[in-house]
Length: 348
Image (tube, one colour):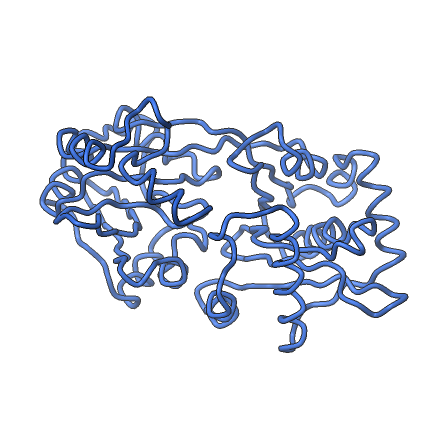
């Protein structure tokens, strides 16, 4: 079938070392951090005619059945590869992948694609359903610092200047620092009434700190007058990319714009260290009209398209599961639709 199913860290790491470009979302460690106890993390390696494609996924049980479905980890994942030409014919890859999914009783697949790996759309052209959900914001850290700064809107420049006067940036190094970051993050989640999905466990944060698959850097903004940490942000560095991953700020000191200062600080650091992209992500649910996207787009006008990919492997079984769970297409665009009730029950 031209494929190999990779499950162990050693083999996963070996595969990544052979790939020209990947992000922390593709690593073995992040899959272990992200999966639930009943999920299986695998990487489907495909090779043919000098082309190599790796598809990392989480395989989930469908409760009360002998079926499974597959998803990408939260963030920006999808396939990684070497040797994909612009005119790539995905027919054989599609056939091979479908055979594997059918053999493994995988009914559907849902992937969040990576906005900076453009070959992913070539691989999935006329295969499944590609949907453009919106834009993400990149700070091009290959540009001169002055040119990067020119792309800031005027209000942001003023906020960063003021925050620089009122606060000092430090890297989190002690347990006290990391505890302060977690408290700021959870305070932020409470303020925005976030779904329970975003309330990560202590283990989640510890595993980011200990992973050697990528570099995690957490910055704190310390209020000069009181000495209190008033904002914190976690950034992940992999290859030539920096990802803005998590952040939080104190309700009492929101007016000091600490998070803006931390992003600006990481921009300077990423430029100095030779990174190429600094992804801030998009709006909530990839919405370009919400306040989160407006916040991020105040830093840069370098936008990239964010796609998701949906595949129904067995339409009859998919429809049976939807009927069994009493949901229909008229209820929602949620995918896979048969998990609609389960999702909203678990994440109020």
